[in-house]
Length: 348
Image (cartoon, rainbow, N blue to C red; front, side, top):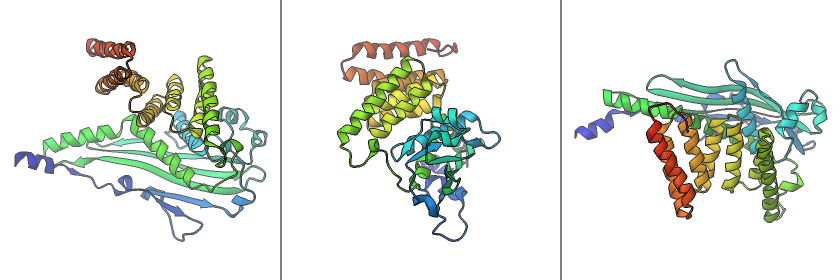
């Protein structure tokens, strides 16, 4: 009975807005007020969207609310780019940055700009909340007409109301788990996916034409991946990032392409995005020893010993299953090093 009371003593917060599926509010069809704070994806497609449909979209740098770092705003921009890539021709972000002072020089029918309204965590001991939000607008370059706009805040709230000391400790653990970097990366992806889903079909580039044989897309994805590897070798990490995203857009079931994206992110100092990319690769291929191994490296360097140990063990098992004893041995060596340096503050 004592154990049962302990389990029942922790009353989780009811976070309907954060845990339920979002609702979509089309302001062009619904009257009344919509609120992005209530887990709503609020959007409006203006009458000029189809006159004609854009055949190219350039994503301009996003403004950010005070207190939001430029690198965090850029991570949301990159996520929007990735989700929009299969739907329309896009100008690589590096080229947009170079030419954004003169949008017409992009030779693109439309641009997306906007503001990052939320990015960060609130931690109140036993409760944590992570918010990632944006307000975006698509404009026609020729006359500046707004043809689409959308806003949303992707949120996660976790923790509990303590009734006794044991339940308070459990609430703190759950709250701390919620504010880890991987959660922010997942919410960034949720935000981008939901907003992009409200943009109507556009004029697709020939490479992404639905009528094109799948084999052609796979071959094209392999070319982009090869270019990304070349860019990595040249240490041109922004270009590698762009190329790997193009490969993923054409063949999003290939875990290796996610691994490439993770490397580009890690080399650019975007550790949270790298971990998220490796996590997606593992979801596609649970036996991806490369993803597990590098996840272990990143987690240990971030001070997350337990997560690193778990990842290296998974890497070793994956490599052994493939008969790759050399790499399995490397994973075992990392585990020994962790045991030796846990209290020294050293890094692998």
